[in-house]
Image 1 (tube, rainbow, N blue to C red):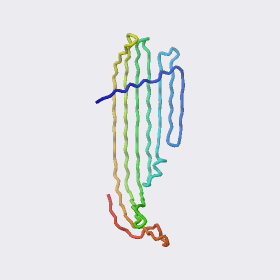
Image 2 (image 1 turned 90 degrees about the vertical axis):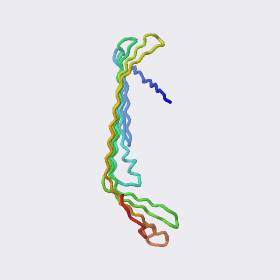
Image 3 (image 1 turned 90 degrees about the horizontal axis):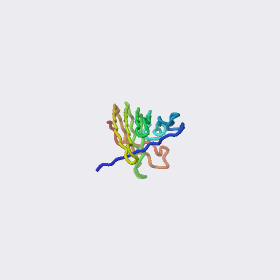
Image 4 (image 1 turned 60 degrees about the vertical axis):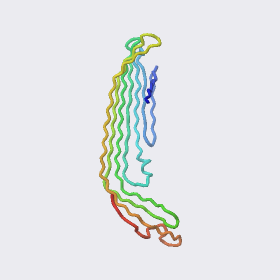
Length: 193
């Protein structure tokens, strides 16, 4: 089973722009037309980083994820019935992860446990995607629209990691009257991966 998605882009009639910015990223979009309205453009760019969000995880470390993309649609009316458009998109996602420690407490009141991991090494993931298209559109009659589309797509993915983890499973002091309540009482096991 297959499907087709027919996206209709906005046709700008005047210059406009928008800027957005927040703690996790920002964006910029521009649109406009030439004086004779034969040439139009739509351009957008975004940047995002989730390092503040990732800093709240149980696994502590140095996280530097960055995502950005740029998209543009340029359209030129050759005549009243013929249009040529260029559509392009470039996106890049890069994750630079250097984990350091992770501590998780779990279990029940009768058996409280702590799982601690110490990490060494890092992981770097890099994903780049490029898309482009040239669209030749001709409408010989009111209800007929013929299109010839040439497109290109390229993606490059690199995942490199060299992470060593050493873990400890400990039993916690569960007596509320103890001075060491909630602290490690007994080591149950160690290991590495």
